[in-house]
Length: 252
Image 1 (tube, rainbow, N blue to C red):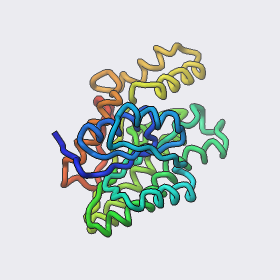
Image 2 (cartoon, rainbow, N blue to C red):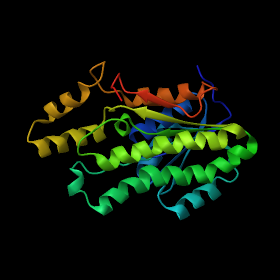
Image 3 (cartoon, one colour):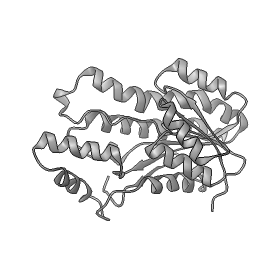
Image 4 (cartoon, rainbow, N blue to C red):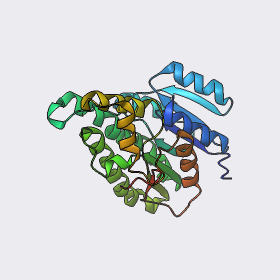
């Protein structure tokens, strides 16, 4: 198993869902973990569950002042793993029915947040000559998904940010990669299936079946599988500028 003992990982959006699963997997691999988010109760609950080597800090990743405060609070901590997982799903609606405010709200977290965290924590990595950044995107950024334009566009932006940033900081010893999950079992996908059923007039089961039928395994991936994938990527020292699909075989 990958041994991350002695390394500190910072995971955004870490209070629940994928963030909690990623934090749990990193912690199980031996890393010290800092979980970041906006819901103090959820963050504290995760820290209580994981126990030692874990701490929680509040931060709005879309706010430069909040991110700078986070960086200052971790000035004495050698963050060598950054997982930009914070994200919002955005509206389920045709593009022509989406407001500019709804569009901006998705990009503020999914893209701006990734940019701000990289800007805050990569300089220390390049100064040390080592570090790993994993940006969580989605296969939805690479294929048509009707009525999800803000989300899909934001995730493609994250993939583009990652591939370019890898060439900027790779020579300094910092690896930057993207993990693109397919549909993940959990409350977010349940919400999307419910909204799609309401929009189309069909059933929630029909909406889910239509979505997962595109995957070779005929299912969604699990949060645990995403967490394990992050750890596995950290055990691949030659991986840089890559975009890894974890989609149960969903074609991107």
